[in-house]
Length: 404
Ligand code: SF4
Ligand code: SF4
Image (cartoon, rainbow, N blue to C red; front, side):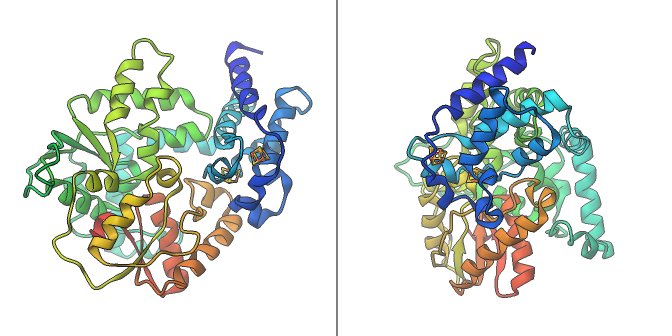
């Protein structure tokens, strides 16, 4: 066993040893809700990982798949009396499996694609074209597309500056300084109009720049490629060095960017810079709430809100989007708003049946509110909720930037 494997197992053991097998996680795990198997809930997962770390189980592909069968939604941790970080144990276990069994081809492909900005721009352009030519209808089977004529080109053209439109922040609050928009891969490819709405909103508070961002690294970390995640983190730290605040409208990106300080803590050359970078990162609603943003007018929509896991539990942001939406429209809370929608990165592609069942419950909860629009602040959730929109026909799914 090499040093990396030993360190990985030590990290796993430090987490699993905190579990006292009380079973409180069984009541909140969305995967357990649909799979009804002990191996699919935090307690069972941790037992499997513990057995593997102690040498009682030999890593194999079935075990690797069991570790993938987790949304990394943190609901178990939130409800756990010992606050056991099962999602982190799963991420570390995936890393260990990738070293032991080799990285799976589909994850290598995904990582290679997301690590290459040229390919992302090409994909965004192709998606835009597919909408114009009607092929978008076919692609919609895989991912719901949102592309307008005012699409991607302006947003992805590289570093750009958008002048402040007006001084919206409350006069008694400190000026936000130089703000930079971190546009994640999914916002670039699938939701360019929502990304434009974000830039417009930010421009009402200060001058905005859009540095050329690399992928935040979350997909790489989630699939056993921690080394690539660290390389991407360093690229972003360089690219956003001049910003006073770094704002993102993707919950997953925000959660990942705020972790750079932790992820690079053991790297003496980067630790301080990573810490400084993470301290500047804010989610869109977190930022707008902080600067006292007021929508120009209240619209007639009835809206409800779905909490992205990486925003509500990953960053503790719950009040801010609700408060802003109450200023912008008629707001109604949905039942279990913070329960995962089943999208979770590539979970919906890897486990479509479980993802569909989890989404069905979300759709029922949205419909129970009679809302015209379900709003969220994460492109991964938005893709999943847009499928719910097609399934239901009773509501629209929109990014928060488009409602504010
Ligand atoms: S709630 Fe926490 S301590 Fe209890 S079984 Fe689940 S992970 Fe273990
Ligand atoms: S992170 Fe979410 S899906 Fe994974 S075990 Fe915990 S509650 Fe279940």
